[in-house]
Length: 300
Length: 277
Image (cartoon, chains in turn orange, green):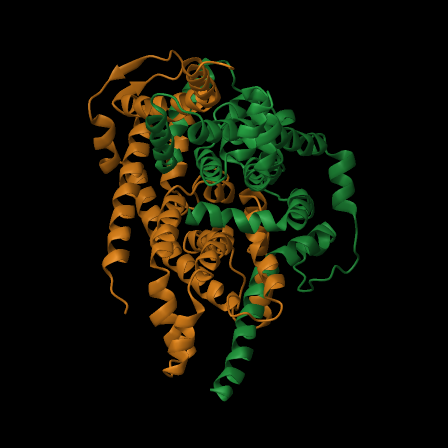
């Protein structure tokens, strides 16, 4: 009756291979081969016009440590990560907890909160540049309320430009992480809170002694996503500075410098590849440490 | 305890409203800016309501701008094609990795899973060189080919089929439906929820993408909306037409907003699946 078992199994194996083939091809070329290729390029000097590659050993890696703009880019990026990640994680957790408090209208608030996540980095950077421009609303409000005596040109001021991008990044990433936290909160048994309430724990105590420890695995996930995202921040810095990383390199991030070195006129693609490998290693190391710290830290 | 709750509630509402204001503030100014005259914007008015509301910026974009309508169209094209390709290929791969038995299946699965961890910055340069060698620069294939599948959503589809009973598909096979028929007519329709979720996020990803289109598309007529908007910034040698830029930004938000309102529940589910499972 029907197709013999062996033949059916063979057919299933063929179908399985056929179905997964497109994914294997695309991921094989554009991820796995590409990683190996990136490592290879990072040890070479690439001539963009002829396509020639000459082996230069670890010169490209050494150059990262001696190049002032790369040191500046790493410094900016680390500063960016160390300010944005804690704030975005904390805000996301707090807002998720508030939303979880079963208040009327929470769904409407949630819909509003999600809006920044939907906005493209191009549009939101434009909007923030408008807000912070010389004649823009932030300056006008600050002048009217007396917070400033004269307008600041936020977009051209090396002292504040990166801070504007930080604010923008926090504003646009919190909602996504908030949604992740909210899903996690819904899995915490309500009885724990009730028991704590009976024992006389107030809302703040309940937050720090129940919510925060219970959400630890989610916090690890949020921290890792935050670290991976912020370390590679490109769009906002690029658009804000029109690709220059200015004013005075204050918005130069590693990702932006990689882009400029890779696709600029200076045959520095190998150097850019070395920088990208270093960035990836840095991301892995920091993620690993963050995960360990979050695991061991005892908040009970 | 009663008294405490009475205090807590207004406080929580206070937080909710403050954060909502914080979220909406930039959007409200963007919308207001798009209806203002250029003069009013540059004169530094404090009023969020335009003094003389005008559609001037929108008319300029749609009637006088050489490329704007093209950019909107290009973005829609890339998003639609990219999303359809991704949904089909991710579902096929996820289905194969959970339902069909073949040698090396687990290895393939773990390798695909591991690639989720790879930072995109590492892939940028080799991907560019590969795309260039394939002669795809300045074409949409440069954007669509490297992103034709997505490891995260392959994983999501696999999890879905792992947890979903096999009965219906087996019944279909007994009824004489071939493997392709079983997949497209039975297995895919069953996975409506995860397919909707990945569609929404893949569409959003393409719509908002900046780096790849910026790198690969060189002629302005081929730009996507995000790259186009960014190019408007530097168009008039440093003088930004804020009214037009704000109008363009607002327009770029509209399609996503519509999708968000219609398919809201899938936006909320998605994150749950990614984060939890």
